[in-house]
Length: 472
Image 1 (cartoon, rainbow, N blue to C red):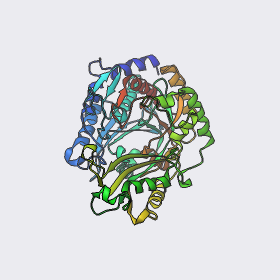
Image 2: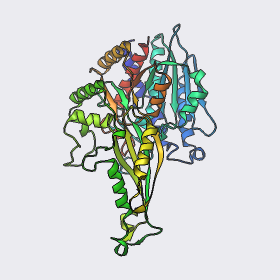
Image 3: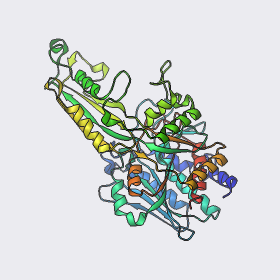
Image 4: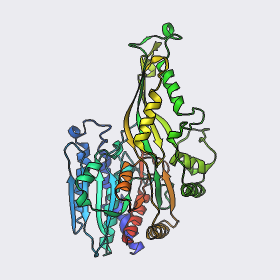
């Protein structure tokens, strides 16, 4: 493949200034409030997920790729899946699976005044809006990469592009599609996942691991109704204090370390070495990419330890609460109940269901003062650790990163969860994986001011095209 031709073509396809580029369609996608089913119980009635999939379908169809089959797959009661099959152009070619998703996280608060979750805004090469980087760009990137091969008449493998609509809910629907359409999907020897992150915007980053998750709601009930805090204080234990006490079983509040051994694993030597290497590349960008307030420091000074904390060690976040009135409406009342939304990230090789069961047992055992304590799971997902990289893939990634970015690639474990990867790893144990993405410094997936770094998306698309051409 011609690197110059590839970059020129791809950059024009991604450019906001080029007539007919994919940019306008990507903006239309951002405008659709296509929240994942976990956040939009009325998704079928509201139709936003269907609208996002239809938008992507119509754009792919407009590309007029030869020897393809394009379809929106539907199973009763399940979110739709966009399915694109591109026939191989060389004999005895393997199957390559390219993956992304179109469902989105909720809007969240704190967007800058000129920005919003459903309003695409371009500033300095950054396209702001929910879902552009996580992960709406993926379908455009995958199809454009395939177009490059077609344009340059490069013999290629059979491609299957799967774009789902339930990933942000833990991909509950995808296993059903993988089973129902197994024969049509085939057995991929190579998987490209475009739903991950990058340590910077200056090279190809390939994800070596993903953490799993054990998430749910902890509810502590102490009263049938609220009572005067002056009257009950000192007699009735606070539901909030009991919740704190229960969390102390799980987490050292001074350090954030998860205490029970059941939530830890031995970190492989290879991942320890990769963490040290990544720390040398990123330096203080390991933590400075986060919007820390002035004077705030990370939990560790050792950069490699911070990377391991984020990728191979469990970590707890309390992501929501109920039973707490807004400050302006809070009176001197002891509340009957406190409920906390807990998100426990677990190591890549730890079983998600087992971790969730252990978490439930830990929190519900021996309730203090006889309080009513419940932990209700809403997500249990396994993480993923990449198999050893085949020589052809290592060479292809290295060559294309240097050619397109001018820098060597770098490995990085991710702290988040892509349940589909664990599913694929188990279903296709012989497959090679390139898990990558555009979620770099400050891109802020799931939070306010999420953006897609358009130059990075274009360069990554060029790299994916070259790597697809190298599939043996």
